[in-house]
Every structure is written in structure tokens, then in C-alpha cells.
Image (cartoon, rainbow, N blue to C red):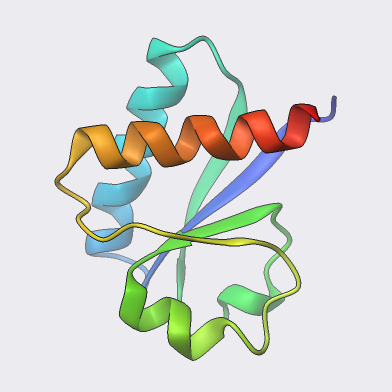
Amino acid sequence: MEELKIQAVCGFGCGSSLFLRIKIDEVLKKHGLAARTFCGDVGTACSADCDVIFTSPELADRMKERATVPIVVINSFMDENEVTEKVLAFFQSKES
């Protein structure tokens, strides 16, 4: 499988998206998964070359009509269990 590209998105692409990206990277490392992660902002996220977008519920609502890739909603970027569960679920969906 080609290396997946995961985009973490927030309003401006430099605050909470960076925090979420770090959390996603931790999950990838812990579970031996490979992906290229990067941050994006809500205005340009849908035009970026990626396989999935991870973001908050509010921003997901703003992007859902324009996105051509799956959007994974993270309710709490601080909740390591939620981030882990949703990252692993996305990888499992790509395997099938």
C-alpha cells in the first residue's frame, strides 16, 4: 500500500492542527504504522493532496460538502483514546 497522507485541520493551520498532528504521529509510531502527516487550514484543506482529513466537528461541517476524501471527526484533540481509536479505524478501513 502506498504511504497514506493524513491532514490535521484547524481554523488557521498552525495551532490546534499541530497538536492533533502530534497526537496522530504518536499513534502511528506506537502501532508501527507509516503515514505522512501535515497540518492544514479549513479554507484550503479540501484542495490539499491527502487521503483523509482529521478535524473538529465544527470544521468538519464546514468542509463536508467540498471534501473528496473522508473526514474523521475528533471531538476532543486531548482525548488520546479517541484519537487512537479513530486513527486505527481509518487504517483498518483502508486494509479492507
